[in-house]
Amino acid sequence: MSLVFDGNAAASTSAGSQKALRARNIDLVVGTLGIDGPQTQAMLARRTRLSAGTISSIVRELTEQRRVSARPTISGGRRAVEVALVPDGRVVVGVDVGRAHLQVMAMDTGRRTFGMRGTTLHSSHLPSDTLRIARQMVDEMLAESGVDRSDVVLCGVAVPASLNPVTGRVVQASVLQSWAGIDLVEATTRALDLPVVLENDANLGAIAHAGTGPFSGVRCLVFVKVGTGIGAGLAFDGKIYESASGIAGEIGHGQLIDGGEVCTCGNRGCLETVASTRRIVADFARIRPDSEVELDDVIAAVAAGDPAAIRLLHDAGAQIGRAIAPICNLLSPDVVVVGGPLARVGASLFDGIVQSTRQRSLSTATAHTRFVLSDLGDHAEVHGACLLALRRVITEGHARVSN
Ligand SMILES: [Zn+2]
Image (tube, rainbow, N blue to C red; front, top):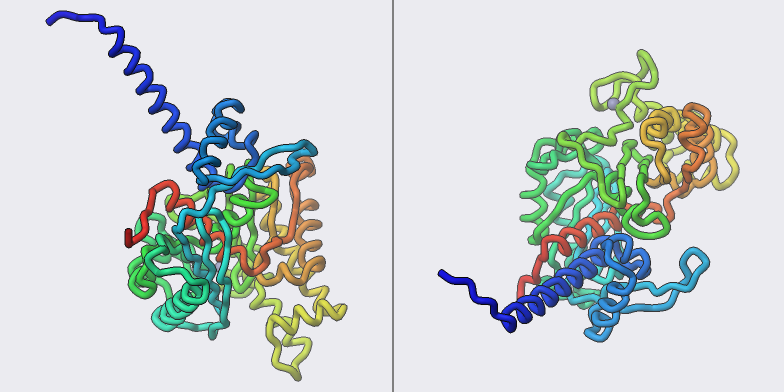
């Protein structure tokens, strides 16, 4: 065997590898836009580690091919160019199953949301009934939006329970006890007749805020959902933190009161027994024994300036702060977002949480931390369900069922 130097072959190999490198870089840019959403060219350069010149040239090429759109914007006080994917016809659906509510929404690959709708459920709803209603709502939403079912490539489902990341089974369900133990992936796939990805609702609240909007991609974001249950989701660099057990974030079941009330989890004096909406409504009902009290009545009483309702929420916030303070010392997060139905009441609960957290943690740990109320309110979880599904679609390349 002899080695023969062939100048032409070497030149064509070099041109081929240049072409392959360019194709890889284009895939990297498209993937980054799909996973992290619309962003400036400067942000794209940082995330992909490509040069500003390469990004600029790729964005120009993709714009000509109508695969991305670029528009002028202001970032950090400077003129910049924001780049977004042009929707490619694929759609994802989000479904949020709560203790007493169900929400659905859709999102295209350009991250435009549409079709949001919701309904209330009775508090001990069964999986078979609820999933049948979910199927109906999804079908109505798609029909009204003019989307063919075959364009839906994945459905993200939010549940108020901890899930085993491997089996998808519920491992801790203090809120939806009738859902414990069933194979939810199988049940939701069959009921919705769509491929599904399931996730804990607080984790999806974290993704909704860390994957889009002003806190997109921050180093550490903590989302605290205050509802019938209290749970937290963690996002690092815009990605959900997932523990091997699926239990991470169950801050509602840390004991705060020695010898307190027995909790649904079997422990005594958990945070959920003193600060969940269930407890707040029960306490308000004790003060107003002559009327049927629902959460909306408490929220209305706070809005009307009722001192008892305001005190209940402030004290609940103070208890929640006791659980958030050690998280702040552990992680020194950039952002703590408070979400769930009580985000609507605004200051009373929120101020209680922030004062108590700051009082009980190192001031240096929270000096830079921004505490905010969720601007997505009750929709954070369904929004996060869509974003999770979309990220999977981009990274795994889900194709439409037809064509
Ligand atoms: Zn508990």
